[in-house]
Image (cartoon, rainbow over all chains, first blue to last red):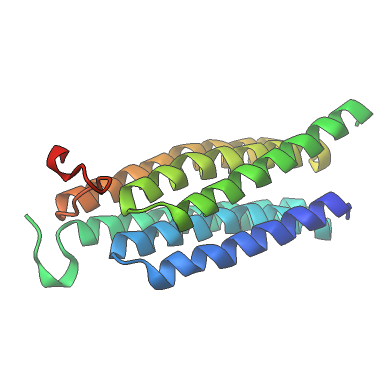
Length: 92
Length: 107
């Protein structure tokens, strides 16, 4: 495991934690969804790096692909849901 | 793997981490939802792409590299799509874009 890879993994972990600030504190629900999207893409990259670090890249690529698919579909569904105001029904 | 490919892969990895961190700083510091979406959509897609190409150059077998390219294609399609869906949802639900102080008359 090269030092550059350790540094990159640490930086991505810090970035994921910082993105959670936007999820917890976002003034609107769309800010929270933005933070969730950031966490999703960073987790995909972090899974690939974990695969390199553990020497099982073939396994971790499949996990990263599945996680990316679930995160993308969840983001789309939540955006569609809140487009019309969510449970309050305040949309156009 | 030649030494030049290793240096190139290290450079791509470092550049990708830089762009991802820039995207996080943008999402944390910019003033409203649409500007934050701007930071998230571009910086994140580019950062993930650079990191995936760097990792594939350095560590992958042929089988892994093909799957990584598919992952890259998927991220390149999915990230702009979800960004667009979020922006459209916010606009249709009535969220007004931010304008600088003193220039509200232009909105």
